Length: 127
Image (cartoon, rainbow, N blue to C red):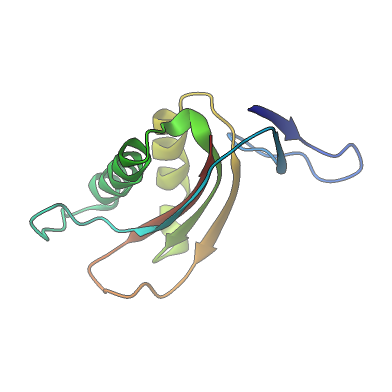
Protein backbone atom coordinates (compact mmCIF):
# COMPACT_ATOMS: atom_id res chain seq x y z
CA UNK A 1 0.00 0.00 0.00
CA UNK A 2 1.17 3.49 -0.76
CA UNK A 3 -0.27 6.73 0.66
CA UNK A 4 0.53 10.17 -0.69
CA UNK A 5 -0.44 13.50 0.83
CA UNK A 6 -1.73 15.98 -1.74
CA UNK A 7 -1.93 19.73 -1.19
CA UNK A 8 -2.80 21.44 -4.48
CA UNK A 9 -0.58 24.35 -5.44
CA UNK A 10 -3.55 26.58 -6.36
CA UNK A 11 -5.71 25.86 -3.31
CA UNK A 12 -5.40 26.89 0.34
CA UNK A 13 -2.59 25.18 2.27
CA UNK A 14 -3.55 23.16 5.34
CA UNK A 15 -3.14 25.18 8.51
CA UNK A 16 -1.71 22.36 10.64
CA UNK A 17 -1.70 18.62 11.05
CA UNK A 18 -3.65 17.42 8.01
CA UNK A 19 -3.57 17.00 4.24
CA UNK A 20 -6.06 18.53 1.81
CA UNK A 21 -6.27 15.13 0.09
CA UNK A 22 -4.83 11.64 0.46
CA UNK A 23 -4.16 9.32 -2.46
CA UNK A 24 -4.05 5.61 -1.67
CA UNK A 25 -2.89 3.01 -4.14
CA UNK A 26 -2.35 -0.74 -4.03
CA UNK A 27 -4.47 -1.33 -0.93
CA UNK A 28 -6.62 -4.38 -0.34
CA UNK A 29 -8.83 -3.40 2.62
CA UNK A 30 -10.83 -0.31 3.53
CA UNK A 31 -12.19 0.20 7.05
CA UNK A 32 -15.01 2.66 7.71
CA UNK A 33 -15.20 3.52 11.41
CA UNK A 34 -18.51 4.81 12.75
CA UNK A 35 -18.52 7.89 14.93
CA UNK A 36 -16.59 7.04 18.09
CA UNK A 37 -18.02 8.74 21.12
CA UNK A 38 -16.37 9.77 24.39
CA UNK A 39 -17.90 6.79 26.16
CA UNK A 40 -15.89 4.07 27.89
CA UNK A 41 -16.72 0.36 27.89
CA UNK A 42 -18.97 0.85 30.95
CA UNK A 43 -20.92 3.65 29.27
CA UNK A 44 -19.30 6.39 31.35
CA UNK A 45 -18.48 9.79 29.85
CA UNK A 46 -15.61 11.77 31.39
CA UNK A 47 -16.00 15.44 32.21
CA UNK A 48 -14.21 18.07 30.16
CA UNK A 49 -13.37 18.32 26.49
CA UNK A 50 -9.77 17.09 26.62
CA UNK A 51 -10.67 13.88 28.47
CA UNK A 52 -13.56 13.24 26.10
CA UNK A 53 -11.44 13.89 23.01
CA UNK A 54 -8.69 11.54 24.19
CA UNK A 55 -11.26 8.82 24.92
CA UNK A 56 -12.89 9.20 21.49
CA UNK A 57 -9.43 8.82 19.89
CA UNK A 58 -8.72 5.73 22.06
CA UNK A 59 -12.00 4.29 20.77
CA UNK A 60 -10.90 4.98 17.17
CA UNK A 61 -7.59 3.24 17.91
CA UNK A 62 -9.48 0.27 19.42
CA UNK A 63 -11.51 -0.17 16.23
CA UNK A 64 -8.33 0.07 14.13
CA UNK A 65 -6.60 -2.53 16.31
CA UNK A 66 -9.61 -4.87 16.08
CA UNK A 67 -9.15 -4.76 12.28
CA UNK A 68 -5.39 -5.33 12.53
CA UNK A 69 -4.62 -1.69 11.72
CA UNK A 70 -3.19 1.35 13.49
CA UNK A 71 -3.21 5.12 13.17
CA UNK A 72 -0.67 4.64 10.37
CA UNK A 73 -3.54 3.31 8.24
CA UNK A 74 -5.77 6.34 8.81
CA UNK A 75 -6.49 8.28 5.60
CA UNK A 76 -9.47 10.46 6.63
CA UNK A 77 -11.39 11.43 9.74
CA UNK A 78 -14.28 13.71 10.60
CA UNK A 79 -14.51 15.30 14.00
CA UNK A 80 -17.82 16.64 15.25
CA UNK A 81 -17.55 19.29 17.98
CA UNK A 82 -20.46 20.35 20.17
CA UNK A 83 -19.12 23.93 20.19
CA UNK A 84 -16.58 25.88 18.15
CA UNK A 85 -14.85 26.93 21.40
CA UNK A 86 -13.26 23.45 21.47
CA UNK A 87 -11.44 24.00 18.16
CA UNK A 88 -7.97 24.74 19.53
CA UNK A 89 -8.14 22.09 22.25
CA UNK A 90 -9.30 19.58 19.62
CA UNK A 91 -6.37 20.51 17.37
CA UNK A 92 -3.87 20.09 20.21
CA UNK A 93 -5.16 16.64 21.19
CA UNK A 94 -5.43 15.53 17.55
CA UNK A 95 -1.86 16.62 16.77
CA UNK A 96 -0.56 14.82 19.86
CA UNK A 97 -2.46 11.61 19.12
CA UNK A 98 -1.58 11.55 15.42
CA UNK A 99 2.08 12.43 16.13
CA UNK A 100 3.02 13.76 12.70
CA UNK A 101 0.53 11.71 10.69
CA UNK A 102 -1.47 14.03 8.44
CA UNK A 103 -4.61 12.33 7.13
CA UNK A 104 -7.33 14.31 5.40
CA UNK A 105 -9.83 15.75 7.86
CA UNK A 106 -13.02 17.68 8.34
CA UNK A 107 -14.12 19.38 11.56
CA UNK A 108 -17.84 20.06 11.91
CA UNK A 109 -19.65 22.03 14.61
CA UNK A 110 -22.84 20.10 15.24
CA UNK A 111 -25.50 19.15 17.71
CA UNK A 112 -24.22 15.73 18.78
CA UNK A 113 -26.66 12.88 19.58
CA UNK A 114 -26.09 12.88 23.35
CA UNK A 115 -25.86 16.28 25.07
CA UNK A 116 -23.13 14.94 27.39
CA UNK A 117 -20.83 14.28 24.42
CA UNK A 118 -18.62 17.20 23.41
CA UNK A 119 -16.91 15.36 20.53
CA UNK A 120 -17.41 12.44 18.15
CA UNK A 121 -14.86 11.10 15.64
CA UNK A 122 -15.42 8.93 12.57
CA UNK A 123 -12.63 7.66 10.35
CA UNK A 124 -11.55 5.78 7.23
CA UNK A 125 -8.45 3.57 7.15
CA UNK A 126 -6.84 1.38 4.48
CA UNK A 127 -4.43 -1.52 4.51
